[in-house]
Every structure is written in C-alpha cells, then in structure tokens.
Image 1 (cartoon, one colour):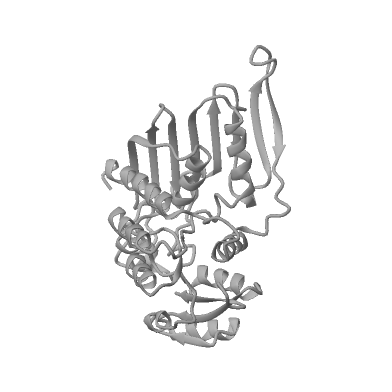
Image 2: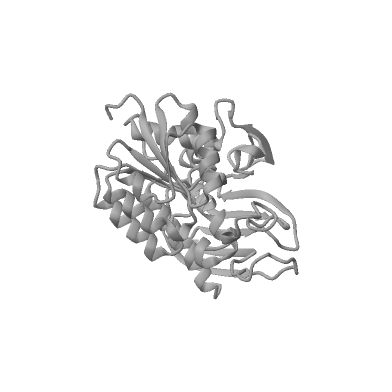
Amino acid sequence: MSKKKTQIGMIGCGMIAQAHMQNFADDRRTEIRWIADLNEKTLNDSAVKFDVPNTTANYADMLNDDALDAVVVCTPPLSHLKIGTDALKAGKHLLMEKPLATSVSDAKKLLRAADKHPDLKVSGCSCRHARLNPKFEYVRKMISDGKLGDVYFVHHRGVNRQGRPGLEYNPTAKWFLNRDIAGGGPLYDWGVYDMSFHLGILNEPKLVKADGICANGLDKVDPGTDVFTVEEHGIGFMTFEGGMKYYWERANHAHASIPNRTTIYGTEGGLQFGYCTWEGPEIEFLYVDRKGKGKAKSKTLTVNLKRHKGDMQELGQAFIKYLLDEGPVPMPMDIEVKNLEIIHKVYRVAGW
C-alpha cells in the first residue's frame, strides 16, 4: 500500500469495536477514515473520541470510498456474511470479528467469497486470546519437540456462574441471548478461542466423532427479553484422527465454579495451565525423571509475557503487519471455518 497511512473503516461501534478503534487510532501507520453504526449516539460519540472524519448509518457509504483500504466488522454474527461479502466485492481487506458466522453454511460462503479475491487480505479474530498469546507457541514447541511424547488426551474446563453476555456481562447487548443472531452461547462465544488454541498447538487434527451436552434455564433470572435460546452450559467429548481425545466444557452459568484450566496428557509428560494471558505466565510440567524410570516430578515453567502488549493490542498489530506485508495472516479463514464445523457438530449430537 502506497499511502502514508492505511485507511480503516469500522462497521459497528460497540464494545469490542472501541478496543479495535483505540488500536488503529494509536498506531501511526493507520487512520480511521469511516465508522458505521445504527445507533446515532454511539456513532457520534465514537467519531468525537477517535477523531473520525466520516460517519454513516449505512456501511455501503464507506465501501464506495476508493480511498478506504480495509474494514473491520464488529456487528452481531448474523450480519457477518452479508457485510463481509459486500466488503470483499468492494475490494476492501477484511478483519472479521468472531464468531465468523452463525452457521457453517454461512461461514463457508464467506470463505468462498474470500477465495474469489486472492488479492485481498482476510482474517478472523479467534486468534486474539489464543494464537497471538506467547503461551501458544511455547506449548506448541514443547509438543513438537517431543517433550510430552504422544499427546493422547486434552482436558479443558471453564465454568462460571452468572457471567452471561447480554445479562450480567454487557447487559445491553441482548442479541447474545438469541441463537439466531449470536450463533450460540459459551461453546460458541468462547469455543472459537478454545479450538484456536487447543487444536492449533496440535497442528489442526481432523475430527472423527463427537458427543455433547447442552443446557440452559439454570436459574430464574429475568433476561429482559422474550428470546433466550443459547446454552448456558455446554460439554463436548471428541475423538480426532490418531485416537486423541478432547474433553471440552464451557459455561457462563452453571451450578459449579471451575477456573479456566487446560490439562494436556502425553505418554512422556503432561502440562497444566490456564491458557489466557491474564491467568499468569506459569505452566506446570509433569513428568517422570530418569527417562521414565524414576520418580514422578513436576516443575513450573514460566512463559515470557513481558513483551505481550495485551490481547487486543496484539491483534491490532498483527492485522496491521498483515496489511503491510510485514507478517502472516493472524487467523486464517479456513481454520475459522473448520473450528466452527467442530462446534456445530457438538451442538448437533447434543440435540441443540
């Protein structure tokens, strides 16, 4: 790109968009040229806060601007296919917020649309807490170096109480409670990060079969809307090629409280850790000394997080570098689609 500053357009100006806009406003290589939102107050407040020259309630206005380089889509997932396809047809690079779409078919349509424009740079966002996290490369290298032997089981649980988007968290965004708009509950909202991290460190194994459980209606709190169709608690148990098993549990409300915790079991060692950056740099490595002939031991490994600027900042930097041909795609669209297929498979076998 020959311009002095890469010109960015934001479609949607809600909570997550504010963090994106701060990244682009703070970076001397980028400039927010357009913002679009249906809420007039949110639109005007954002324009003032980030000194944006062009605002609109109709995102088509920005797509008609030849000077605009890239758009970031931060609207509810139901709208992602149309907006993303329109942006690509208009010749704009695309950063699509997660989850990619509400259905596998829509996700595949968006992937096909991107494939028709190989000159455009397209990325998802489920790398945010996962692949851009220093723990990701650290753990992946331990596995690839054979420190764990053969990985045969991954166990992950993250169970909260009354932490539901649209209720206790970001309560004005009631669309989170509508599966037709959001795509799903915690298995969808956080599952894209879980799949991005756990399957990425294992080089994207292929799913063989899955089982699952989903539940909601676990309290009588008034959601403030007539539509509450997402799960509150979801569980998946999956088998991948080679026989590796993966137990996966997510809840934003259930009658238990279990920290976000991953355990990886290998034939020669295991790891226990919380994969998010805010859970600290420690990873517990469990093994048997004397090449398996001695005593069971463990030691705490420390991942260097000092250079990690923060998950949102790292995503912004990764996308800017990608646009400027200075770095790889942060989150490939085909992997986003594959991970959504796995989540939807769990939903189907759970009868959800």
